[in-house]
Amino acid sequence: MSEHSLYAFTETLPVGKLSHDAQAGRYSFQYADAWAAAHQSFYLSPAIPLHREPESPGAVQRFLENLLPEGRALDIASVFNQVSKGNTFALINVLGKEPVGAFSFVALDASEEKAARIMREQLLEPIRRPLPDEELSQRIRERDAIPFPVWDRKVRLSLAGYQDKLQVLVEDSQLSLADGSLSSTHLLKPESLNPRMPFMVANEHFCMSVAARLRMPVAPVAIRRIPEPILLIERFDREVKWRDGQVDQVHRLHVIDSCQALDLPRDFKYERNLGAGENVRNIREGVSFERLFTLLDQMVTPATARPFLLRWALLQLMLGNSDAHGKNISFFAGPAGLTPAPMYDIVSVNVYGRDVEADMAMAYGDVFVLEDITPYALADFAKRTNTPPATLAREIVRMADAILRHAPEQAASAVYSEDERAHVKRISDFACVQATRLRGLAREVPKVNPNLL
View 1: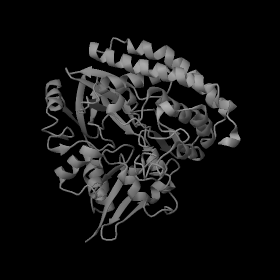
View 2 (view 1 turned 180 degrees about the vertical axis):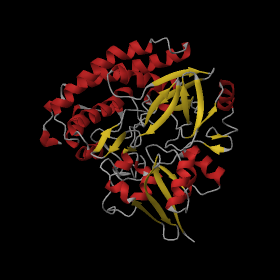
View 3 (view 1 turned 180 degrees about the horizontal axis):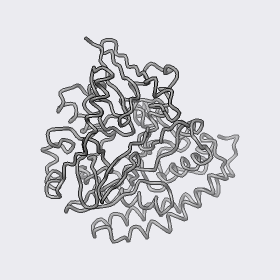
């Protein structure tokens, strides 16, 4: 038998049935009649609409692949569960209870009635598995020997991305692994194992905090020391209800990243999807700013989504976040369409210098390298994103002024240790140099002859 199925639920509501024919390599998704007819229902992604078949036969598989972790985390999930890394359906079966967004995928090859019963039973009681600081500290130190996503003989990570992270329930000072009727409320990130990128916890905390000071919508972050520093990131795809000082309910919101919104494979998260090698650098089929801005047609309020996308693009430029790719920007999916989700995964990669990849994930015009940005490149970016050059220039000046004011203030925060403070000062200095340079270029952007673009 090569055909298998899973049911998708949002909490206890049946959403539909995922089917996979392994022999033919086909995926399909059939929405439940009641879900498709409900006034407040929403799609998995724009490419998998509620009331008609997907235009592309690969849309369902691409959506699922984008739910899965990458790199070492995917290797761990594959080996631990004895399934191939290329077997998307099998990985969704073992990791699909709490992916990003609103849906759970459960009940392999069950009847619809049995699937509903399984889902109800899973949500009967709240289960907290406490994570004492001592245990967490030890696991962080032993990551080379014991994979960080594996806890209690179970892979606990079902989130996209390369970094070590863990889904946790946070109740004041208590951290727990959540199960049953509870879901995680935060993501936990320890320091990177990459010796070329030290102080990543402070780096991300600083960049996210600067964005918040600029009044950009960002996921709240906090540093906790156990004693190793960990970053706690509040999940924006969860709504938490409290009772008597404890989490009573966690309501899940549907969020998709831009690869899912654009119906692209996860391997297309970088604009130069085949890499930056000399013979392939001109192939740019992945997520680009031009592609991102086409999503405005699907936004609930394009008038507010447009400045969000513009500011997100400029923030990466000023902070030097060369890894701001298509899976690091997401959108809430609702009955009326898409809405930008808060910003996340904002780090200064370029501050590490030649030890890391300096090329930006997406080009500004045709330019991928910070030092090569010119008024022409910015005017080209404006044209490709249908942004008036004068609007772009004003936004650059406004953001640059804010960076010059707020980055040094954040770098002096007492939240950082002495070593961390020295590192975030380097990021602040880097960002201020970038902001000053871009501010100077902005004056020339409206002067670029549009006929030359």
